Image (cartoon, rainbow, N blue to C red; front, top):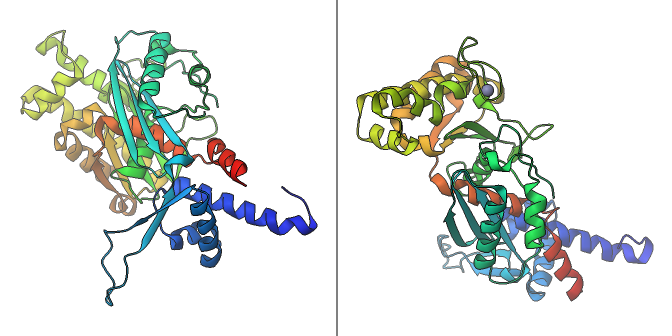
Length: 387
Ligand SMILES: [Zn+2]
């Protein structure tokens, strides 16, 4: 690799081969023409490289039966994806009271999903152990696996300061990457859900807390230190309640799932949960409906600022509170329209996220599938063995 002179043609071909493999990881199932577009290589070069990769067992071909047959009865187009033998991706979602694991092949097909309940005050050790068991159960064979420490404002108190990526990597002997629930939800909705094919989209996770994941120009945007999207800490009322971030009157103190539950507990009972609030809202309970609609309005104001700054074309709303549907979304949309500048407000559509509580674990899969650099080991290894 990298030799000059007579070896340079060979290394150019090897570099192009890696470009095609990387593009396939990100694209999932795609056409030769789309690969040519994504890699900037000619269609002839792509076809020749794909021919080699199919012979080496790294790429599989499949007929696209969904495409309309040609006018002359021509054959349906043939699509390509990474072969199952090229490796697998594992997604793990650590929630407050559950851990979920999903496995996908490198062609973006989800092969299995498993969930285990955990006590809501569980320690990191318990969560990691359960995830390790589930990964071993979900994976058809051995697989291979960077950094990630759970921050101080985490909703997982038993996990603060734990280097989750390293711990998980040690247990599985695989490279691991960690990201937060809002970023993962954004990736999942971008790859498989309501943001599919949308280059500029924002995912709002409305649950116990409030977070946003930003996909800009087709890529997840995490900022300089990885904290971009903390819309829950937008100041709405500077004289409001003190937030867990130590500021006052953050959006989260007024409109999070936890805040709506607290507002309703004096009248509906101290054992009220967010799940109950969603059920009562869907049943048309007047106080629950009122509190959820008010939350939607507060969130809509914060979203209007985000829309003015980033001009997204779609906002996908997920998280447990999103299950309240239009009781939450209609006031959110109205307030966003009212406070955003009109052109930015006209460009954006606000949708409910169809992936629901699967969004985080699927997002973890998408993170691995789109990160060709960190996770290229199995494919590179196979390339070298078979060369
Ligand atoms: Zn705050």
